[in-house]
Image (cartoon, rainbow, N blue to C red; front, side, top):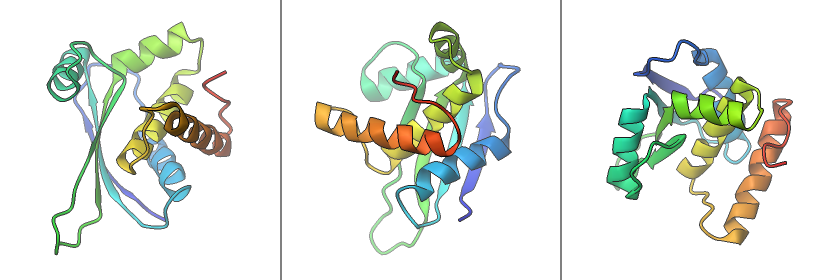
Length: 150
């Protein structure tokens, strides 16, 4: 199933995944839990924009790896827009290095994690966190990427 991705690169990083990689990661994540085709926006940002959005929407005054903004379709309108992911390239790069992970494996994990949030998964309590993490591990395994939580 083909999902449509609007990729917006507003970051300074010289090393970001290609549209094709994002397409693979999004398709693998979404097809694991739904048969519906979706449109998704992925915006790559620097730390300043990530921090501002994280402060505004999550009341945390620091940059973060990925923010998910689900789109709520108004009643009576048929639209397959799932929502937006905002990914901070510098945070992803720093985390991959600090956690001794392959950079693009960590990118894949952040995209999958964000897609699951857009589909309504969360990790607020332990039960939901365990379910979401297990699903992430299963999806990453389909891409030959190891468990990021080990």
